[in-house]
Each structure stands twice: as structure tokens, then as C-alpha cells.
Length: 181
Ligand SMILES: Cc1cc2nc3c(=O)[nH]c(=O)nc-3n(C[C@H](O)[C@H](O)[C@H](O)COP(=O)(O)O)c2cc1C
Image (cartoon, rainbow, N blue to C red; front, side, top):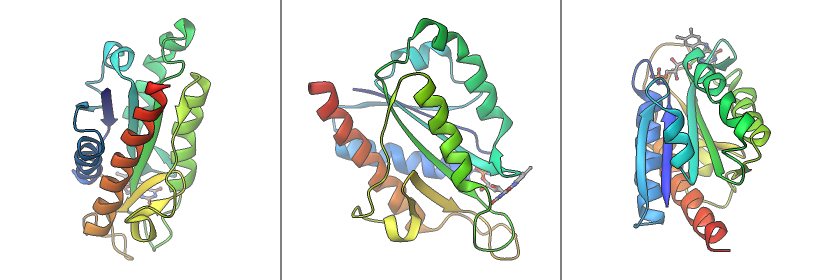
């Protein structure tokens, strides 16, 4: 199984979440090959070659970072080809805005899913029974808050990284079952 995890990260928080998802994916499917790429370095061939594609982004002004959107727009060519149809997708995000609510995170994750569904991909959410969900999970995927209530940098918590690992393992396990069918 080829897993591609592509994200943007300015300050390293989203990348840490990506690394935790990668670790979980390897734990869930020890035979999996996991490729971790920045959104800007991700090539169309990386996308073509993956069985599982996981996209992550910091929330920027209530939506995804432009680097992630640029990757999505570059990949429009693959929509024309139907090249991503039937592939398995997952998402994650980080936010750090003022307060504890994480303004914009859900619509950011849903926007990533919307793109996957447009490609005809199969998307895998995050069931609440999995480890780490209560502290770092949304039904869409794992979410890390990198800022404190005053909007100052604090770093994603260990709990968020636990949820990311847990989600990575879950996606890999479900993907293995789907690929085997
Ligand atoms: C231009 C910009 C806009 C941002 N807008 C939001 C926002 O709308 N909501 C939010 O929760 N965090 C917002 N943030 C905080 C980022 O989500 C936070 O810095 C991110 O989690 C850091 O991830 P990174 O270390 O991977 O770059 C914004 C940050 C930047 C730089």
C-alpha cells in the first residue's frame, strides 16, 4: 500500500501532525510505504502513485493555506483523467487563532474532503471510539491547536499527536480492507 501524506506547514505544527499520522499508518499497516511531502513538493505522479492520500493544512483566515489550494488546483488535470477515482482519502488540520474554538477548522477539513469527493475518492472520517479522539478529534479527522487562548504560539499537544497517530492507523487499516476487496 502506497500512502501519500501531503501538507503545508509554516511553523512545523502541521508537519508534526503529519509525522504522527505517518507513524500511525506504519503501525496500522507495517507493509505500507509512506511518503511525506510538502504541498509544494507534491507532484502529480505522487498523487497518481498513491493508494491513500492524506491532506493536511493549517487554517489560514478560516480556510486552507494557499499552498494546499495550489496543489488542489494543480491536480485538476487528474480530475480530467479520472486518475484519483477510487483512491482513499483522509484529512487533518491545525489552527491557532484567538480563543479555544478553532474558527474555520471544520470548513477547512470539509473543503479538503469536497475536493477528494470531486475526484471520486473514498473518504475516511475519524470514529469517536478511537484513542485520542476526545482530545484531538473531529469526525472529519484529527485537529491540533497550535495556539493558546490569546492566539500566541503554544505548539500542538501530545493529545493531538495521539489522535493523529490513531487516525493514521485507522485509515491504513480501513484502506487495507478496501484494497483487498
Ligand atoms: C495568515 C494566517 C491566518 C490564520 N488564520 C487562522 C484562522 O482563521 N483560524 C485559526 O484557528 N488559526 C489561524 N491561524 C493560525 C494557524 O492556523 C496556526 O499558526 C497553525 O496551526 C500553525 O501551523 P504550522 O506550524 O503548521 O504553520 C492563521 C495563521 C496565519 C499565518
